[in-house]
Image (cartoon, rainbow, N blue to C red; front, side, top):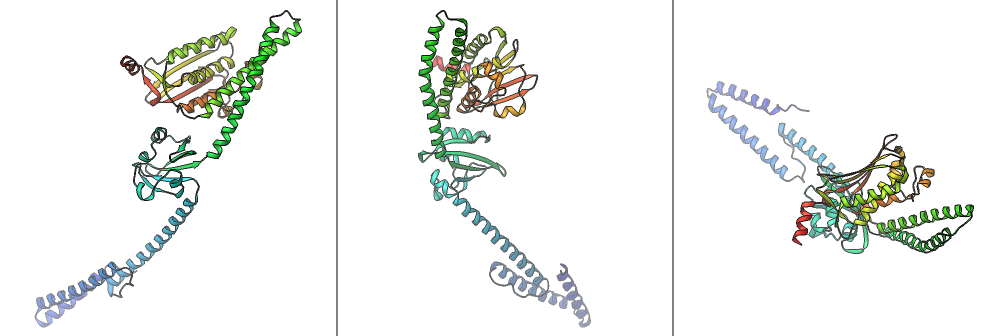
Length: 437
């Protein structure tokens, strides 16, 4: 590479030549001034040619002498390199856009200010986005379902969201959002209508089968109660009592299957109503003490008196009672069970603590599966149906919350229902609303 000081060296040589010539002619300053003017005009002419080429990059660079030639060659080489990189990047982007357009799933890129930057063809079909109209608009102005807005703003996208398409109620979409960059979002929406129909078919089968089982079980139990009121030989009496116990267990299983089927049929609440947490927990404690019987569990309640919860009373009662009854069933006699309702800035928490034997860590991720049992023998003796935690899970999904499980072998377990802050209601606000009504 030639020296960057080449133009300075040439200027010094010209000045030296002008000085020597001026001294020899006895006209030092006039000669020096004339030489400098000629040199300046020459450099200005080279600069004009350089600028003319820079403004018209399509032509080849002119062949200029000295440092100007070096400058043009360097600029031309970098321009060519940049143009090659630009062409490669353009080809990659074009290829990506082609492949994204071919996807059946919606793909939408959203900037840090919630504005639409880019989307593929499927987003136009399933979400109704219009290329010339919606670009740059806020996603929250286009997808206005309150459930989507709540999901979008909470910035916790671990679980997907299922909603009907905003332009076709017959299409069910599953939304996934991923954060990237400095707060940008990638939204992917998948059409799961076919899967939902299959799931609905399965739910209908379970629901219908459960309904059909209720009638014969009721008849069998009625006859068993009639026979048990009669004097019977000891072996027959023992068999009848076992049959009655198993019938009750089957009725409980059918009841839980119907409850679970109903919860699965809709993933979101249609109406939120204030729930009296204190009264509900007192009722659950009373029923739990009856279930404990001779085991004499010590059950205590700790309640935040400032907040109640919005939701469906019967669903929440079922979820909370399942957690408490499980603690009664699966902890030894005399164990301590604590029912705690507390709140903070993030939301509300209903936690059930016990000091039982605990659960091994590898079981915990599967506890909410239907009919999953940690200990088959102990579960059969307890009379549980194996559906209790599945019911709790679906109740929490419908209320926008989560079920968290912590357990340590030999120390006990904690089952906690976590509700978002917007599901809480201050008792002062509730009392004011009641007074105004």
